[in-house]
Image (cartoon, rainbow, N blue to C red; front, side, top):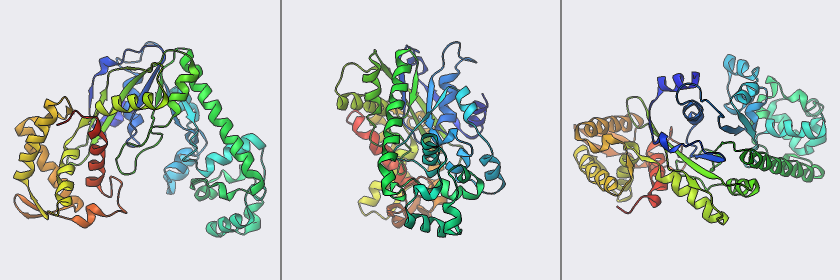
Amino acid sequence: MVFQVGTRLFYSIEVRGERNFTRSPSTIIVVNHRRDPDIPILGPLVHFRRGFWPGKRPWFFTREDYFYPGGLAVYFKLRGLLGRLAFALNIGPALMALRAHPMHQLADTKVNQMLWELQHAWGNPRLEQLVRPEALERLASWLGQPKEALGSRSVRDLFSWRYRKLLERKWDCGLIREDMCRRVAEVQRGLARKQIETFASLLRQGETLFLAPEGNTSLDGSMLPFKSLIYRVVRQSGTAVRFLPIHIVYDSMTTGRTKVFVTFGPEVPADNLPRTKMIENVRQSLARAGVITMSQLGSLFVMEAVQRGQETITRDGLREWLQGRAGELSQNGANLDPRLLALPALGKRLDAFLGFCTIKGHLSPLGPKSYRINRLAILDPGRKAFPENPVNYCYKEFQSLRPYLSPA
């Protein structure tokens, strides 16, 4: 309940379609993973509906390194007093109490996660027994320590605040001695097999799972390819499974409080489908549940103007385009922010969007109702994430949904 109260202090949250959550046995809740606040926002919605949920709550699957001592400080690269306090915390027991289960990520493994797993598999070897000599020398130079001193440290010694920079690094198999690479790969494959069996076993018991099929957050706002994990889990479970899509989107390009739309889509039976078809059905159901926002349509308008070589836009031109585009999307069954369909609310939301773009430097006012487009900032290939380039991010977000919308 702390998450529920805390997130509503920072976000205005609108929830749709909760009746689609029938709590049928052996359900996989699939969500699009947008940002770090996703779980604090979505967790209370599926765990608690009218107070505490009377019955079984879903199993969440989150990053494995969150369960290690200091995992939060390492993942978020916290510094100073806050970092030291977070590094001393072990939130694993609290996560388990919330029915969270560690999920191993082969594609985004950090050094702290891999060292923990190697320690579990092989005991407490010294770093020089694991790492190539040339890699050990680079790490020692980077950390500002003598090579011999660093190499003599055991794996257990490295889990300290002093070595946090090393623990934050992304794992690279090139660090490991050649004779150890195969053994490391075996450890990872074994963890992946165990993980799939854990998921399948829970489904056989009628439990509900909560998964993000993209596996990670998208840097530029586009929907990432879905992992084959969901197909393998369904097949290995040997039971009738259904998917419940939950789509979350942040309408953040505003000078006011960010509005978050959470939509529970209709449940989709897994059926006995080939892998590609099953994954595409899940992707389609998740995309169609999405709500179209001012951030997305406004960014689409600005980006298309840039692509045409247009240097300026006007408020009236954007408002007229929005009215027509929102009306077409609504007629074709798309989910829209209702403020896009009501003139007084549209004008207010439009001004907040233009104000945000002006503050971020994407638009420069030329007069009361006209703006110059900062093409270089919007098209900069090195700026993709939302904080750096919100226009590009929200444009890509809309483009990911576009193929699944009815033709407008």
